[in-house]
View 1 (cartoon, rainbow, N blue to C red):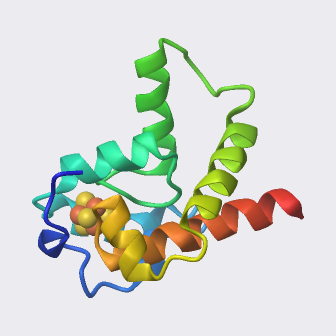
View 2: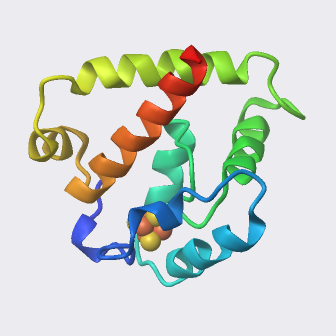
Length: 132
Ligand code: SF4
């Protein structure tokens, strides 16, 4: 990612703030305010778009990143198989990180340990949500 995770403005901010409940617009605004003052916001957003992250990343919501992906691919509106693709990608990434400590995963991904914890929590939610 080429960024210094120690610069992240969300260091020390409660993780759950970045995973607001669906449709709870007010809850997202606090995390979005943190991102606004983050020096690595662009790199974080690119990461989240590329990796189909859930929650607030890089000053964007899930929906905003869906739109960014749609623009990239020339698609408009919601992808028909978006949820399925995300679940498959989440399973694959969980397998990639299985057996690694948080520090090892952070090293491999080039992100902070905090980002790995968020990433794992998001992946777990996606995979468990798909299974239920
Ligand atoms: S989620 Fe990303 S942009 Fe927002 S504060 Fe954390 S590192 Fe920065």
